Image (cartoon, rainbow, N blue to C red; front, top):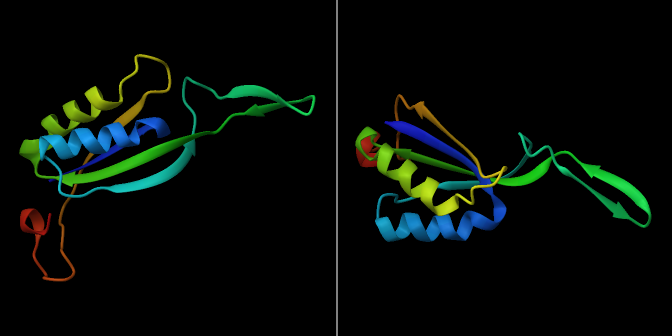
Length: 113
């Protein structure tokens, strides 16, 4: 099993949810609001005549745990759904997951997903 973490633009969340739902690959995910920066580096704006530099940008982090066989398909769906071609589109991280346990039923691993 693998854990897929995707850091994406906030305005792409609904597009991603629809794409994942339409493809039937994912039965659940965790969504968090996060702050960060990469090549985009933030932006400057003026508020009441004062220059304000925002260096941490608001992003969305999606976490999905999946069986190994579906990982490439899920990554492809994420990439197609959120790509704009501009700096700041985000990143996808894939990590191994040793064990999953559904608390309610004590099911483990693939059955717990």
